[in-house]
Image 1 (spheres, one colour):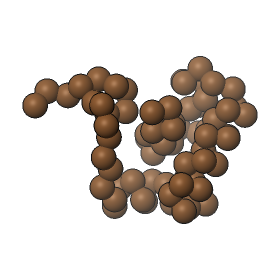
Image 2 (image 1 turned 30 degrees about the vertical axis):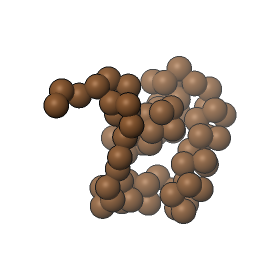
Image 3 (image 1 turned 180 degrees about the vertical axis):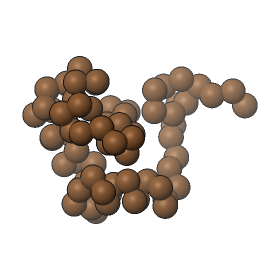
Image 4 (image 1 turned 90 degrees about the horizontal axis):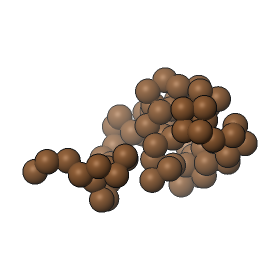
Length: 72
């Protein structure tokens, strides 16, 4: 879930540093998580992440990124 929140912030235009601050993380934690996201997606940077998220289908479990169930 934390990686999904980071990915969502990066796609919203946050810098890695701003996303780390928003999430209450250190920049090192955000950098490590972003590398894991990029590796899992087979991409190499934020622009490719945005492209992949906008053109792909995302499935979230347990109510989405923030863990809040959406009404049916």
